[in-house]
Image (cartoon, rainbow, N blue to C red; front, side, top):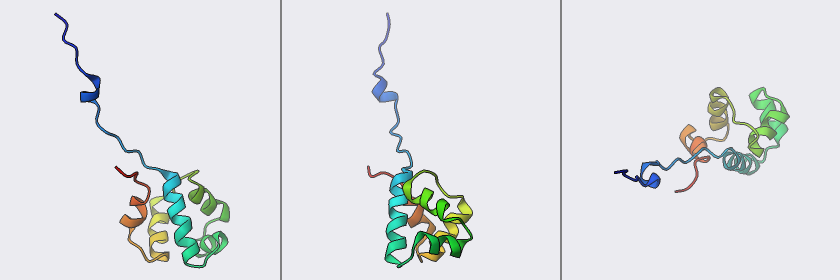
Length: 88
């Protein structure tokens, strides 16, 4: 006798980090601070292209940059990182 297992019961819900959502949040914070991408880049010793890549979701910044972004925009690291977690 073959026992059939419903595969849906074996799957855990996986919520992948959304770099686009993170980037959108970062762009809003930047604009609300009245800064350009070049301003942020200069303050954090980055290139404007790096800031653009973060905002478009092309890539995610190193944790050291995340820490500095949170300081710059006066938000917690948790708030910044969690902005990329999809809603349930």
